[in-house]
Structures are given as C-alpha cells and as structure tokens.
Length: 213
Image (spheres, rainbow, N blue to C red):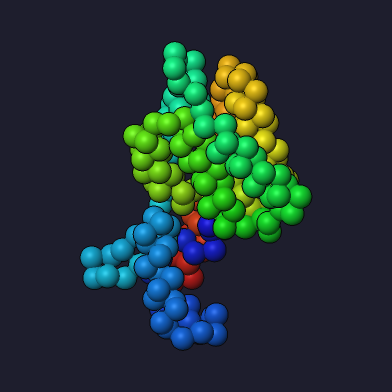
C-alpha cells in the first residue's frame, strides 16, 4: 500500500519469510488473502505480485456505491417505508464506543467502516441493495484502505457516521443524504490522492531497480 514493492515485482515467499522472521506457511496464507482482497495479482505460473491501481475504475465504483447507499436512505421517503430505528440506535451506540476509544490508524479499520455502511443500508429494509453494496465493497476495499491510515481520518469518518445516523433517526432524510454524499466524496478524494502517491512511489522504485539491473 505504501509503494514499497513496485507493481509487477514478484513477491518471493522465501524472501518475505526471512524479512519478517517467520516460516513460509503464514506468508503463503497472507498472499492468498491479499489476492482475495485484490491487493495482489497472480502470474500464470502461480506467483504473486502487487496489483495495479485503476483510478478510473475506482471512481466508477464509488459512484455506484453512492447510488446504492443514497437509494437505501431515500427509501424512507416512500409511503409505508420506514428505517429500522432500533437497528439504527444500536448502530449509533456502537459508533459512540468507537468514537470514545478509536482504533489504531491502519487498514483494519476498513472492516468497521464497511460494517457501518452495510448496516445503514440494511436498516432500509431492501436486501437487494445490501447484497449489491457488499459486492461493491469487495471490489473497492483494496484502495479504500488508503483512507484509514491516519488518526484524523478515523476520527473524521467516525464523526460523520454519527451525523448521518442522527439525521436518519430524526427523520431528516434530505440532510442525511447530503451528509452521506459529502462523506463518500471526501473519502474518494483522500483515497485517490494517497493511491496516486503510492503508484508514484512504486514507479520510482521500479525505475531504480531497472537502473540497478
């Protein structure tokens, strides 16, 4: 993620194992998981390398994500449709705890963030939207992780989650939609900037390796 390994460079199990002072088994398992999360690609012979970031595809997926989440929130504007307020209150309690005791700034926060957005969509009562959102989340997860590498981004995202929830619970759907749109837009801006920097670092390292060879 930080560009330490250039795109296309083969990641050798033995080298990584020696570097981390572990056996090759956990390294092999890590490669499999990173491949499943689309952080690594595979060569035809089965070897792994760092996946390239497609910023154009990222923007398209963020647009789809926003469309799905706004659709879930706006369902409350339809006659006879209400959000599950009990589920939203429970979700609010969870995020108040996160705010009181924020996790370390690393990529693992992505799981908490995804759980928020999925739970918010699920409270709308449309299971199809939830299913599609989960599918989109899988595809953008490798680059969305870039959003949660600093304490300020985790604090800001947590506060924005609570503000979105407060608006939905209060029945202020238009305000909730506006806050969600701003929240996702800010995330995209941060992700694009950090992903582009990682791509630049990888390119620089690739050129240095070429010169050394």
